[in-house]
Figure 1: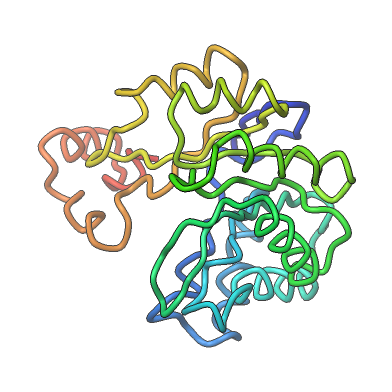
Figure 2: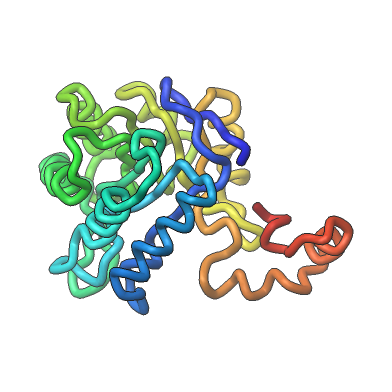
Amino acid sequence: MRTRSLGAGAPAVTAVGFGAMPLSISGRPDEAQGVKVIHSALDAGMTLIDTADVYCLDDDDIGHNERLVAKALAAWSGDRDSILVATKAGLTRPGGRWESDGRPARIKAACERSLKALAVDTIDLYQFHAPDPAVPFADSVGAFAELQQEGKVRWVGLSNVSADEIETARGIVEVASVQNRFNPFFHESPHDGALKYCTDNGIGYLAYSPVGGGRLNKKLPGHPVLEPIAEAYSASPHAVVL
């Protein structure tokens, strides 16, 4: 499988990574099936797993996805050291809702929980899940920088950010990656320059929901642009997108 480089000295990872969120939110499979799905991704050669503390049902379930990933890795027969696990902080799930909380103290507390959930001493890639309008962006990013200085985080990433926010963050900490939504139905990053900024500055760009997510991906078959390309290469529209 092809690989892509992240920034800030982080290792290259497979161009297609495994997003583990569906294994822990509403409609999730049982644990055994979740572990099996993760093993299938790893056995296929993927070396990047993306998770988050809030990939769960609600605040009482925080860390479910991280614990599932840790369990799957512990039971996997392959080389654990070859897998980069990326997780996130900056959101909460009160009552099952998705809400921002970018307070530095909250981010640091979330890091401690994630270290325990993932059963590691250091998080490979720790991403700021999304800017919090109620907290200065620089303050939130500063918490990630401090966690890195303390050795609890190897590399720092951002998510759901603009080019201006990436620039601000780089004045505080070296940014290894940016994870924004990017698919045939949603093109925010090119509009605000985030993708170009990452390309120009050697920052890894991780596209989430690349085929549109659980609902929109069903619209790919028959897409007027993708379908002819898929037919020409004997591939699925989903493969063309990736």
